[in-house]
Image (cartoon, rainbow, N blue to C red):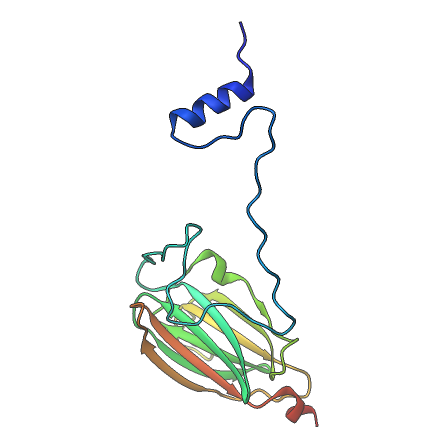
Amino acid sequence: MGVCRTTAAAALAAALGLAAPAVGQPASKAPAAEPHKEGEYSGVQPGEAKPDASGKARDGKAAQGTLTWVGFQAQDDGAELFFQSPGQFSVAQRIEGGALVVSLDGIKRMARNTRRPLDTRFFDTPVARVEPRMVRARGKKRGARAGGVEVRILFKKGTPPREAAVRTEKGPDGMFYAYVDVAGSAKSATE
């Protein structure tokens, strides 16, 4: 004698203490979130604990030397990028091939989502794109560098690359942050 899949699923849900919809009834949907008005940003700020799906703050346990977050904020006077890791690291920068390259010394791994580039060309900032990537160590000859994580900051057309102001701090969430401030707006660069 066969058991109906719906009945088996309902029995399993009841055994696990989960609420299951009645047989033949559609599952209720979660209420839709209110849409944001154009230009309104309700994202997270660096240093705030990020909630998980249940609304509770995550404990954020990542291995030392891991880049856990790459962030971007448009500012009135340019843009601010920030990089998060559980442990302290240092920042070095150089101009290379029309881009500002930021080396995160002491970072050897990247969390899965930090590998994605950030497309920032639609903001009124000089920054067009942010590309984090893993790099291998090179020898002692010309172009020598340590292995780890580099972030290429590409500028909008007509904006010459320039070094940025850098500051670091330990946030209230216990994570270490490096802030890279790129001054100037895209309009002032093209006018």
